[in-house]
Each structure stands twice: as structure tokens, then as C-alpha cells.
Length: 153
Ligand SMILES: [Cu+2]
Image 1 (cartoon, rainbow, N blue to C red):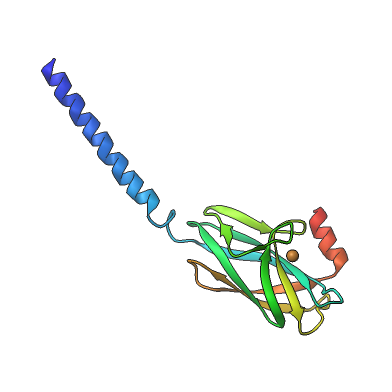
Image 2 (image 1 turned 30 degrees about the horizontal axis):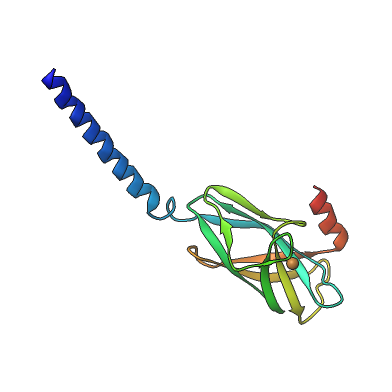
């Protein structure tokens, strides 16, 4: 009877220790370093008042990160917007997940464009993350019809 109690105490202690180790691992670094790749970057042709919206697919095969800023050549103002056009200071890029910026949802708002964006042209873009190194991508400028087709897809 006494022996059983002793072994029971040891088992409880070992389980508690494993729990502490597991907790320490999962809380440090939000699941390891992020592994981000960005594809399907496109921007709508600009409006007459010199604004446009940019969309992209952000795949993260590592730990969580945040998109903090976007730099786009020729745009005086670049802001992350949610679906209601409300500015966001940071966009969560969850770990082991795909974050989609698509028409009707989260997008990157470009304003005060120096030159109109014409369909068929390209735009250089730099994405700045909280943890990952900057990512440089090329955005394809699409017509309104092409953007609408993407939204319906
Ligand atoms: Cu917007």
C-alpha cells in the first residue's frame, strides 16, 4: 500500500515536469520561426483620384508573424485595410496557415499614386514583417474586370 502511494507520487511528479517542459516550448517563439512565401500579388487599375487596392496570398509554414507595413513604388500612402476600409496597424499572419487578401476582404490600400496604374503593367512591392526578413514581390496590375473575376473565383 505504501509502495503504491510512493510510485503514484513519482508518476505525478514526472507528468508535472513534462507539462512544464511542453509549456516552455510552446510559449517560446510562437511555434518557431515563420516561413513566409507570398504569391498571387495583384493590384487593381487605379481610380481617377489615384487610389487602388492590392491583394495577395501569404503562406506561412512556420510560426506566427505579423505584416506591419507595405511599401509600393509610386504610392504616397499605403495602408492595410480590413473589409470595411478601416485601417489596421498590423495584420496577423498565423503560423501553419494561409492568409488571403482578396477583393471584398482585407486589402492593401494604395493612395496618392504618382502615376495611374494601367492593366498589364507591374509594380514593385516590399512587405515588412515583425519577425521575418522583408519580402520583395511583383504585383501585376489587373483591370477591374480581371479583379472581379478573381473575386468570383
Ligand atoms: Cu481600403
